[in-house]
Amino acid sequence: MSEPEPVPVKAVALGGGRGLFVTLSALRLITPDVTAVVTVADDGGSSGRLRRELGLLPPGDLRKALTALAGPDGPWREVFEHRFGGTGALAGHAVGNLVLAGLLEVLGDPVEVLAEAARLLGVTGRVLPMSTEPLDIEADVTGLEEDPTTVRRIRGQVAVATTPGHVQRIRLHGAGRPAVRRLEPPTACPQAVDAVLGADVVLLGPGSWFTSVLPHLLVPELHEALVATAAARVVVLNLVPQPGETEGFSPERHLDVLCEHAPRLRVDAVIADADSVPTPDRLRRAASALGADMWLDSVGSARRPGRHDPAALAAALRRAITSVRGR
Image (tube, rainbow, N blue to C red; front, side, top):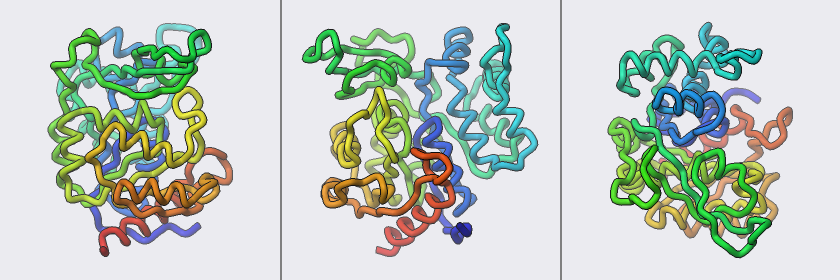
């Protein structure tokens, strides 16, 4: 597939993990002006260890966003993604996670840290945390084997993503706050809010719906910015449901959950893979309820089933963005 033509837009992508990585990889093919706003609720793996031991922002999703915007040829990209093997204290840590952790301890300000790391990697664009404090995800889950009807409260990103059952709703708390204290909602990174308000297009998804996509809508200032922005708002749907989070979800159910968590949010375009939507009319109605047009395209990777192809997604994004801006 030939690379899509550039689109002169300021784009902001919100998410985390592999989903945000593919969105950023696609966006950098059509515009150099890309800002990533990254979730900071990870509590597993290398990120969770560094977060618990040092009290810092979990660096893993931030690292992935940086390497996505660095492109495939940057000399530091492979180093940042390298993980130590063996069984020692460094086993499992990504080099980039340790670099970011060190910068956070020395410089303190996460925005300054990410700017320094971006310069090191030769990043085209910008990476920002959605909050400058680590956050915890809490979910109401039903359908557990031992008691299918009772709603259980599960806390922590890894627990939410892996606990069997059906996630009904999520909330965000600052790390270490008791779950009952809801008078102190998480605070947004001011630069992330400004980026959303000043964007031409804002993207949500793909990615882990409850632990990477929806959390951005639960940070009050970021929520209000997403509601108020004049940018075109685009939702990119996953190709397959995710076990532990959205197993059994139809494509339209993803949009229903989005609306349940942010009923005032309006959307301009919904992009989905044509082969992943069994009932297009239902998805079209769900998209229309959010104010959006539906765009069905072939955006899946032939080599990696269940994942998006960045070039195909870039082409679909270009068509959708051009159409929305031409209204």
